[in-house]
Image (tube, rainbow, N blue to C red):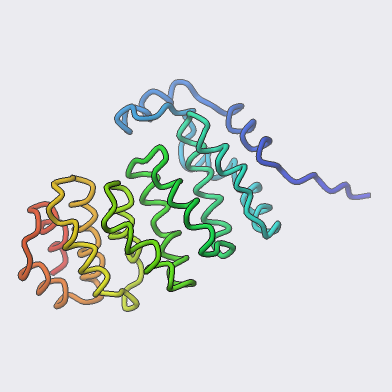
Length: 224
């Protein structure tokens, strides 16, 4: 008789991660992230392999386990935030506009470029599925004092290609082009560079017509 293995729960996958920590890798991994966070020392391929079954099973449940997500963001080691974001990505079709305040909270929690750039496309997916999200939340983030919300407002359309709302992109960039924040200027350049693969002329005209930082111009001009 075939015995069905019980599904992995949130605490089980957390325990599995702790059981696979590698102290010799944790130090250089933390150093790479400017020692902003401690690490377990689990590199990306192994982390994905360890979480594969949990992520697969999570999709089948068709519900959002916010307790698990918050737990991962509360734990000190950075791999748990990566785990939560992988989980968010796996269930991104379940999100509604009512979840956006919680996602905004995650963006502002233990923020650094690695987490932000992984959450941003999830936000982009939600905005395509529920267009009013852009006007209710992303428009507000353009003017936020939080640089990471600004960064998401610039980058969430990164993979939109011909679906890019250039009016919104223009507003997000021009209202944040004088912050002198590296991660904002870098995001502006990245967004322009990516959209130039779809519309070189728009990006060329935009760069030539506006006063952007040298970093934004250098990054945005790579393919034009």
